[in-house]
Image (cartoon, rainbow, N blue to C red):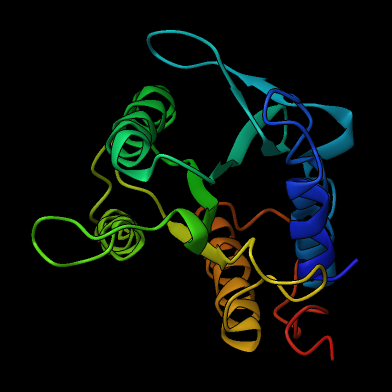
Length: 213
C-alpha cells in the first residue's frame, strides 16, 4: 500500500481500535527495511514494552540490538478537537521521551503523526493548530550530540491529510510528504549508526518510498 492507502485504512477503523495505526507501523517497518535496517519490532505484532526510569512504556516501533532497545518511534493521529488534543500530545511526547532517555541516554527517538486538515482551526495568534504543532515538533526534533537533552527527539514526520477528499487522495501535498518521510527514516538511521557503529547491514541507499509513483 502507498501512503494514501495507509491513510484510508486508518480512517476506516474505529477510533477506539487499538490497532488503528498498525498499517502505518507496517509502512514504517518496510521503509526502514528498504534503506537497510531490518528487524524493527511493532506493527501487526503489537506494541513493544520498553523500560523507562519512572515506568515501563509501550512504544509503537522499536529496534533492539544486542538485547537493548536502540531506537523507538511513537505513532499518533489527531483527527478532531485539535485545540484540546495538541497541547496534551506535546506534553505526552516530551514526557514519554524523557522517561526512556533518562534510562538510556543514547537511544534514538522518532515521532510520526497524522493530522487532519478537516479538523484544523485558527489559533488566537493567527496560526493554525496544525502549523503550531508542526513548528513545535521541529523545535523538539533537534536531539543530536552533544545536545542530548531529555525530552527532545531525533526526528519527526508530520503527515497532513484531508478526510474530506476522496479515498486514495487524502494526503496533502503527497510528493512533499513522501520526501519528508524519506528524510525522517534516513535521519533516524544515520543517528542510530553514529551511536551504534556495530550495527551491520544498514546502508544509505534510496528509500523505496521516496518516488513511489
